[in-house]
Length: 329
Image (cartoon, rainbow, N blue to C red; front, side, top):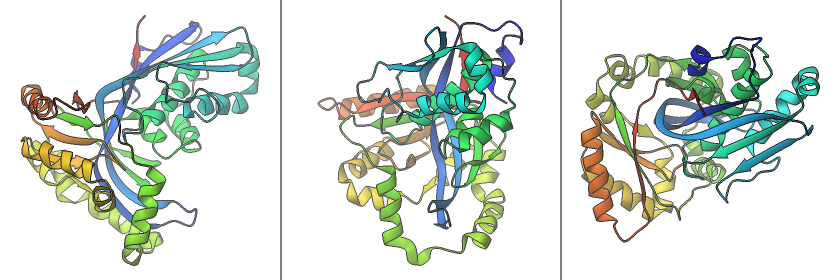
């Protein structure tokens, strides 16, 4: 369930603007199954929303255009931005509402680091879809929003709801799980490092294509196995130490050798303690899980001391039950 729905203004009482907190996601598990006919990879993932969030505001304007503002200089504000594309998609699918409602202004206040493998752009697009659904009083269901989201990008359907979920296909098929309570992630990312997601998957294909399986049969079999795997057992039992032991990301096999700086930070972060350490998505963000905020803060402080002369970004982020939350003011 989208968290904003519980706080939604009743239809018939639409506001002129809506602001949403849009949370980052990490991958607790990422397995590459093989090549899909559409050119993407067949994936099996476990994704989790965490408490590091952008703020996305959608506002009605009198000028019949889409205008996007962002306080981060590296974020594009034109039609290449996923949030802009989300607004354009709704304009094209609901032309009558778009004509009646006028123009759209989207404002993104960035806290999620850019190019970090944390789905910042995707969750901004998800927030735009949900915000415009509220602003235009479309009354779309979660399934309808996720269907639209899948046209924009693989991570965006997850970001509509968030929480804890299995994602399959190219990442757009979402099976929501019972949320994890009380776990924290210490996130670490250098502002000078970025990893291209297309490069990571291309490099993985070049290195491991001989291990790929027929996705028509292997993808479904792997999904079924994941449901009965030690990771799923650990999640169902809310067993933090077991979750930490079963963290897995196939893309580490190509990203870490190609980016020794990322591998070095990973080793230091892992040595600092916690339940387990992993690279999120295609990186370069790394995370360590803990059972408490106090433990997470201790590890973060150790890392700040170790990297006092660098600009390594560190965040302590609790696990969240959803990606999006309506915020006041």
